[in-house]
Amino acid sequence: MTDRVDPIKMTDRVECRSDHEYAQRPVAFYWQGKRLEIVEVLAHWRIPEGYSFRVRNEVYGIFELNYDIDTDEWSINQP
Figure 1 (cartoon, rainbow, N blue to C red):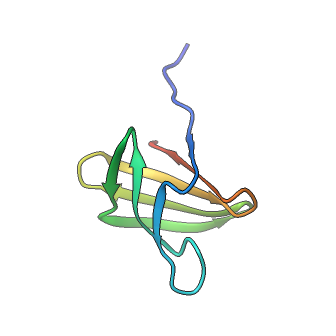
Figure 2 (cartoon, rainbow, N blue to C red):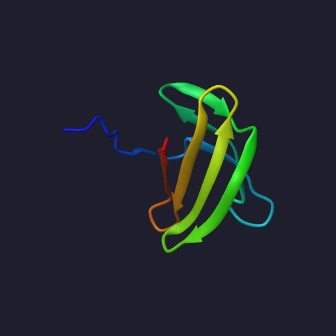
Figure 3 (cartoon, helix red, strand yellow):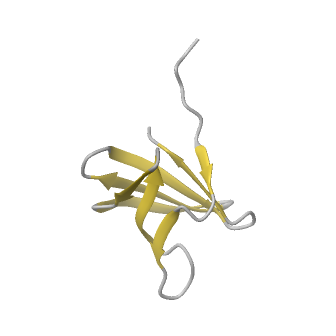
């Protein structure tokens, strides 16, 4: 048995900069009840459901944020 934690679905819990369309660049997100600012977007790519971002928070490290366009939901996990 592993201690793997499944991604947490968090609707509207990612703050984004959105110039031309939604979810262009995440700037902060909520994790375990805390607002975490993103200090760096390490990578971003398109996925079949929407968008994916690998980001870094100064204190808690690396996270992957995935946005599903159809459900308008974010999933957040820490690899």
